[in-house]
Length: 316
Image (cartoon, rainbow, N blue to C red; front, side, top):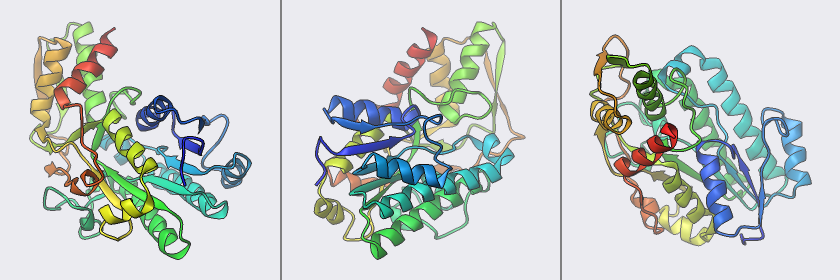
C-alpha cells in the first residue's frame, strides 16, 4: 500500500518532468521524497543504482530521468540516445525487481509510436509500424524499456505502470536553441532575436506539422494520480492489460501557428522564415487519452495560458 509515508524516489528531479512531480508531491504532503543529482548518483552505473535503492529502502520509483532532445540532437548523437536511455532504465527496473519496490512508474513518449499511426493514437498502436527516423534511437530505447516493464509485470509481478506523454513543455526545460524540443527552442530563439533587434528569425522545416502539447504540471497531476490509485483501479482503467496510459491535452496546433503565439507573447516584431531544407518529422501526431481519463485525470492548463506563464518567467 502506497501512502504519504512511502519512500518515493524521483529520478531526474531537476528536469522538466521530475521537478514538476517533486513539487506536486511535496505540495500533497508526501513526507519521504528521495532525490539524487548526477554527482550523488550516476544512473548509468548498475552497482551504484542497486546500492542506492537498497540503502534508501525505496518503495516507489518514478523514473523521470532520460537523455532527451530535439531532431538535431537525436540525429547527431544516436549512440548516446540509445545507450544511455537503455542503461538508465534497465538499472532502475532491475533494481526495483531485486529489492521488491512496490510500484514503478515508467515514462515513455508519444514520439515512439509508429510514424504513420492513425490519429488520435491509442495505446495498442505501439510496434505496429515504422518509427519516425529523426528520433529512432530514442524511440528504440524507450520501446525496450516498455517491453522490459511488461515482462517484469507478467513474469516477476512487478507493479509497473507506463505513461506515454505527448510533447511536454514547462519550467526547468532545456532551453538550448540547438538541442532542445520545439517550444523551449523556439522561445529561446525569439527572445534572443528580440534582444538583438533582429529583423527576422529562422525556424526549421515547413511549419505545417500538427503537434499536441501538454504543460509539465498537468503531466505531474497524472503521475500523482497513478501513485495514489489502487492496482485494481489502474487495471480496470487499462482494460485488465499491462497498464500503458497516453497523456495528452487533446489540442492540436501547427508549428507555424505556435510560432505566431510565441512571437506575440515575446513581443518580437520581425518576420518568421521557415527553412524548408530541414525535415518536418511526422506531419500529425496527437493522442487518445481516454484510458487515463477513466481514472479522473484531465488537463487543467491550456496551451496559451501555459506559454504565457513560461515566457513571462523567461523574460524576467
